[in-house]
Amino acid sequence: MFPLKILIVEDDQVSALLLKKALEKNNHQIIAISETGEFALDILAENQADIVMMDISLAGELDGIRTTEIINDKFNIPVVYLSASSDTETLNKVVGTNPSAYVIKPFNIRELNMVIELAIFKDRKEKELQKLNNELEEKVRQRTKDLAEANKELTRALEKEREIGELKSRIVLNVSHGFKTPLTSILSSAQLLKKYAEKDHPFKAKITKHADKIETSVRNLNSLLTSVLFFGKADANKIDFKPQKMFLAAMLNEVVDVVKAGAEHDVKLVTNFVKLPKTITSDPDLLYQIFENLLSNALKYSKEGKTVEFNVWQEGDCLKAEVKDQGIGIPESEHSELFSRFFRAKNVGIIEGSGLGLSIVKKCVEVLHGDITFVSKTNQGTTFFVTLPLKR
Image (cartoon, helix red, strand yellow):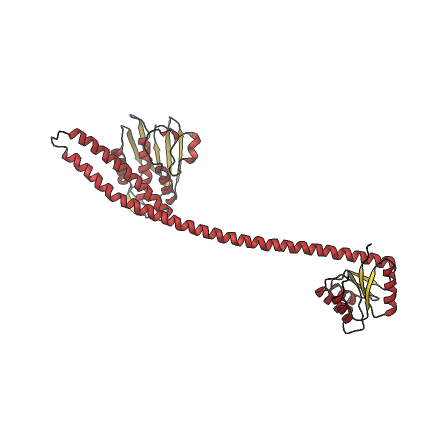
C-alpha cells in the first residue's frame, strides 16, 4: 500500500503512540497527534491529510462524532473511528456520520492496515461516484437549459408561422374577392356581346365564338378563385358547419342542372334518387361543393358518348351517394395522392383543371363528419362512395 498522510486524534497518549508506530512501520506519515477535536480541526486547516484516525471520546468540548461531522462538511477527508466501545447506541451515532471504517480497540497491525486500505478505497470510489453524479447533473442542467431554449425558439417559430399563415390567408381572401368583381363584369360584357350579335351582324359568328371563349374562361377562372377562397377559409379555420332545413331532391337536381350546363362535351348523366327523405337538416353549401365537384370531374374526365351515374339514397341515419364514371381512371400508384391539393394525375393530358376539386370534397366531408372512398382503374373509370350522417 502506498504511503499516506495521517492525522491521529486520540486523547490517550499511550494508544496514540502505539498507533503512530504501527502506522509508520507501513511507511505512513503521521502529520500530527491531537488530543482534542478543536486542535485537530486547526491542524487540518493548515495541513493536507489523506485520512484521519478518530477516537470517539476526546479531551475537548468536541467529541469524535461531532468533530467528524465538521471534517465531513469542511474537508471531505475519510475518517476511521477508533473505539473500545461497540454498544448499539455508539454504533448508531457513528453510522450517522458516514465513517469510512470502524476499528475496535485493541487492534492488530494487520487488521488496522486492511481497514485503512478499505477506507481509502471506499473514499475514492465515493468521490468518483460523486464526480460522475455532478457531471451528470451538470449535463442534465445544460440539456434542460438547451431544451428550454429550443422550446422558446420553436414557440417563436410557430408563432411566426401562424402570423405568416394568417397574413397569407388574408391576402388570398382579399385578392380573390378583388378578382371576382372584374370577372363578373367581363362575364356580363361577353353575354351582352352575344346578345348584340343575335341581330344580323356581319361578324355574328366570330363575335359569338369569341364571346363563348371569354365566358368559358371567366367561368373557369371564377371556379378556381372559389376554390382558392375555400382553402383560404380552411387555412384560417373559418369553415363552419351551418345546418339548415332543405329540400334534398331539389338541391340534388340543382347540382345536376348546373353540372350539365357547364359540360364541355356530350356525356350522359343518369341520376337515381331513391328512398330519400323529403327534407334534411345539413349544410347546403358543403353538400353542394361535394356533389358538384364529384360530378364535374366525372363528366370532365369521361369521353364523348360515355355515361356518368349519380345515385343517392338513405341508409339508416346516413345519406349515401355514388358517382360512377367510365372515364380515364386514376393510376393505382397515385391513389394515395388523390385528395392532395393541386394534385393532378399523370394521365389527365391537356384536360384543364386546378387539382383542387377533390381536396375540397375531402375537406367538406370531414366537416360533415362523413367518409369518402373510391375505386379506380386506368381507362376503366372511377367510382366515388360518400357517406354523410344525417344527424350530428
